[in-house]
Figure 1 (cartoon, rainbow, N blue to C red):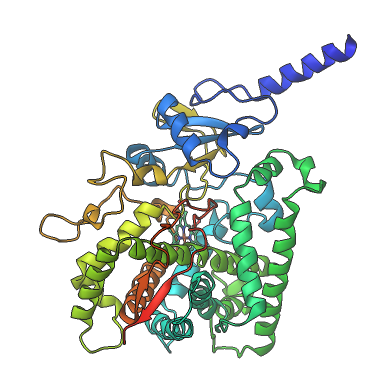
Figure 2: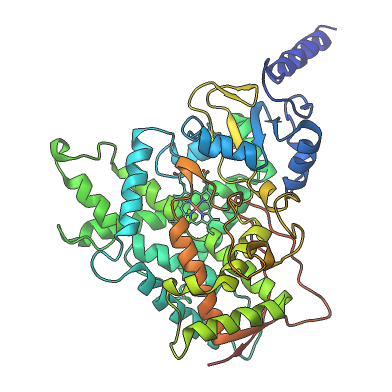
Length: 486
Ligand code: HEM
């Protein structure tokens, strides 16, 4: 009887810990201890999040174990938290898993404050000035796309899974900016690094990761989340070697890349430094952040673009006509050329809309207690911005549930700006690589279509477009047939 009573008392205490405070948004009833984790589904929580909003409205709360989180959907409320009250919601929440990996350093998961501001400003200006007096970003992307085309050509007589080649090409752009070098497509060590990052991007949103974040004691249990830590160790060893090599070979006053620029800052005496929060740990995590954030998001967008072009050959052909017309007898287009190419631009925007590459953005948190639409949101609470909710909203799109570039074109075939489309999020924490990503997607895509026609190899079984859910959504691996044009 004592054990039963103690059990009931414990259950009541746990239940109390998980009951919503007054003024907090409503939401589905959490189960004791695990909260709503089971209801979210093991492979993809997006359908469950949509269903909850049908019952509780565009702002509601869920429990990930004992951790409450507020989900925000729809343009009005997303604009409120990201832009109108952007500063108040610009923090990141506590997350045991990521905090055990990178603390609160770097860029993506850095807490709101002086360190994040200085690193964001420095990174944006280094990206803008990149080339460091030598080559522009655009030239570097064009050079990389030549390598990509050569690699594709090697496979013209077979079926090619484009995943590794595209991933390597996209990652090379970040590597050139940050490490000052690129990696060959047959470099198996580098391929392993890219693979384990993919694996972690998927596992970071898995049931096991949620369980770990909810319960600290899970850390030492032999469960699948241990793989995340093993992958991180291999990746960090790789970065350690790159940083060591930079420290050994750099020449003062002649920075070759992002790492060298940062090391120049670190070298300055404390007195003459205006970047007070710079240190070796922040350098390390910022480099890791750029490498991770800058690779999978962009490469998945390009893979989706190829998949859709094979599913809709008439759209592929229409893009190619526009590309050929503007290109004339040049080998490839420049980024400026996009201005005269509304159709191709609309297609690339539609790829981003329809695939929702970063469906739930990155979690935010209020820097203090905030009022939101009549609810009280306490400081530090996890806010999940459901960016994907905008992409299929029937009030916002002409063709919400089909892949159709007309969603971004008016009746004259001109490009229309859709303010409620936020693939890169918005406000103070908007994606730092937005311009770079747009440039990469345009230049790689147009170069691929210039040089090849792409065909789905088996018309009898159409592509499976169910995404592999993770922080970013990639298509399942697929093979394509490519026919060289020039
Ligand atoms: C943050 C999307 C490419 C670097 C983000 C966020 C989204 C996003 C939704 C979260 C913003 C927020 O917290 O509200 C995308 C998409 C990309 C892409 C869809 C490609 C198609 C890149 C690239 C880089 C990059 C190429 C590398 C330069 C970052 C960084 C942050 C970020 C550093 C954190 C910003 C901060 O917390 O201040 N991105 N991204 N992203 N992205 Fe991207």
